[in-house]
Length: 223
Image 1 (cartoon, rainbow, N blue to C red):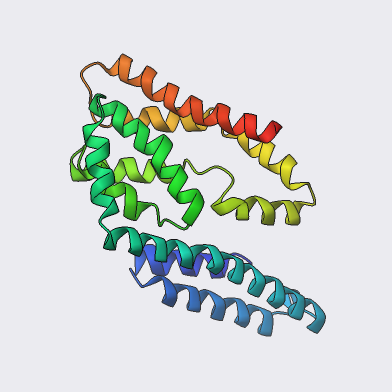
Image 2: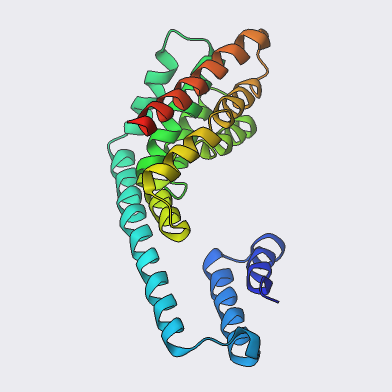
C-alpha cells in the first residue's frame, strides 16, 4: 500500500499517457487518501508540518536551479548558440565516434550539471543529430543523461548528505568512486551505437574520454 501512489504515477505516465502534472496530482491525492483512511499511515500534526516544510524547501531548491537552466536554454536558442556549438563540434578534426564521445562525456554532463532536470537535452540533441541518425542520436543523448556527476549543481549530493547524515564531501567522493567505471562504459556504449568500422579504436577512445571525466571527479573529490 505504501508504494501505491508511486505505482499510480508510473501507470498514468507509461500506461495511460497522461501529462506529468496530472500524474503527480493523482499521486498526491492517493497519498492523502492513504493518510486519511488508514490508521497505519496517520501522521501527527507536527510531523505533517515538518514534512510539508521540508518538501516545500526541496521544491524551492529544485526550482532555483531548474528555472535559470530553462532560461539559459532559451537565451542560447535565441542567440543560436546551439547552431554554433553544432558547427564547432562538426568542424573538429576528429572522427565521428570521437565527437560523439566528446558530447556524451564532455558537453552533456557539463550542461546538465549546470541546469539539471533534462535541460541539457535541449543542447545536446541538436548536436548529436548532426552526427548520427535521429534514433541513434536520441539514444546517445539519453545515455549522456546518465553521466551527471553529483547532481544539479551538487544539489542532489547536498540533499542526500542531509538525509543520510554523512558529510557532503564524503558522499561526493563516494559518488565519484561508484561512478568511476560507469562513465567510461556509458561513453563507449554511446560511441558504438554509431556502428563505426573501427569499433576497437572507437571503444578505446570513448573509454578514454569517460575515464578522463572519472579521474577528474576523483581528483576534485580528493581536493
